[in-house]
Amino acid sequence: MSSKRKITVAYGDGIGPEIMDATLRILDAAGAQLEYDVIEIGEKVYLKGISSGMEPKAIDSLRETKVFLKSPITTPQGGGFKSLNVTTRKSFGLYANVRPCKAFSPFVKTHFPKTDMVIIRENEEDLYAGIEHRQTEEVYQTLKLISEPGSEKIIRYAFEYAKKYGRKKVTCMTKDNIMKLADGLFHKKFDEIAKEYPEIQSDHKIIDIGTALIADRPETFDVVVTLNLYGDIISDVAAQVTGSVGLGGSANVGAEVAMFEAIHGSAPDIAGMGIANPSGLLNGAIMMLVHIGQPDVAEKISNAWMKTLEDGIHTGDIFQEGLSSKKASTKEFADAVIERLGQKPEKMTPAVFGEDATEPMNITLTKKPKAKKELVGIDVFIDWDEDNRDPNIIGERLRKANADGLQLHLITNRGVKVFPEGLRETFCTDHWRCRFKTADQKVLSHNHILELLTQIKALGFDFIKTEHLYTFDGVRGYSLAQGE
Image 1 (spheres, rainbow, N blue to C red):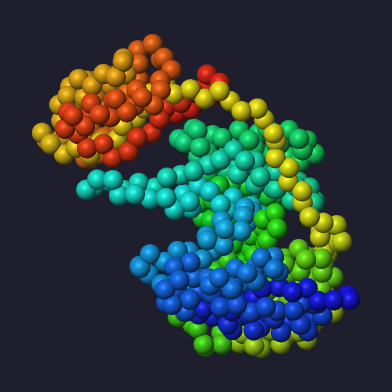
Image 2 (cartoon, helix red, strand yellow; image 1 turned 90 degrees about the vertical axis):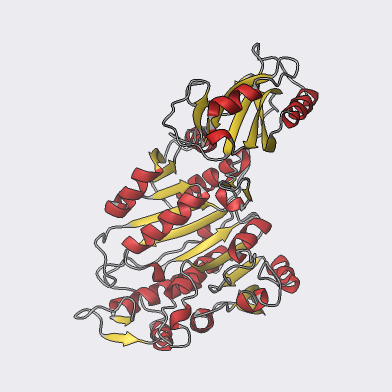
């Protein structure tokens, strides 16, 4: 190659500097054409008072190189510090988290030697939006945000990934039997997009049974695409059942920038001891090399790494009496991989990264006409802790509010209908959702809402939040309460 590719590198915290040093030595020995722009992130930056854990010059580096190889970091507890990973993913639009989970049996102990799956996780939305509020003395809220374009992007990416890498099936996992609108949107987009890829099998599983099956029969999965929180959980489950979370690398891919890392944390309890396994970061770096158009180097390193495992040279976390030939330090393991560059595994399938693997995946979103949006009601959330929290008392008082026919329809507490005709056994907190609608479902204006809230205030109630109830092209855009 005529010139080196510049990438941004962060050594991180805890075991981060040790495993990064090992990884970069292997990359250099393998002939990777790389130039490193080293930045500081993590705990030291947080303690300077920078809540994101990343200084402006680090952001400038990422803008320039568009490729980030990152060691794990430590986020200080308390103090309002933000997750650097979440900030980086969201700020740079790294919408796709890709985590291969493959068994390397018998050289890494696992009960599931045939496992070879990839978890593709939506990376920007869901509960990880981090929008939280304390609304009453007793109740806290986290908002789960799922968008149609965000769902379409990650689902299309999963099918394009399967197509590019010769995968046979894509499985979608959601909880749309409960969250019928948010998770329902994701499932609906999956079903729509799957029809565009008839050569690839597709299916859907509810996330709870899906997680159980990953833990019990992981070899039945190929590519799994799911929402942010679910993906975070099941990717660790999948990595662990293949033998060790310590081996897993991941890619975080956006339209312009990509970040590559180990899936494990900074492990400060063993920092400086020289015993950390660099494999997770190394596998992330292998994904990076493919991404930047150096698949031959990625192939050489991956094969040397597998040959090292076959030869029984293992760090302590995967060492097995009777199988391992040497318990290696971080440095010794890296040295062993370097010694085997140019060799291939004899019992495991050698890695092959074709030139087509470096081709970027073009994700084009569907354009659709804008729906007609009409306001038909409002949910008013009230902080109320009087009269033994009797739903009938708050209900009868709120019935006095009437803004041109906009009247109380029902009250729920933690999602359960308590007025009218609630059950006396239902436990109630101090947080009440009061739904107001008109009898004839007429279209409302913001003036109706303002008048209603004025009346609620005059009745002596503390409203803490509102959610407007809309229809889109006549289709209800809100969930029905129990018994509604």
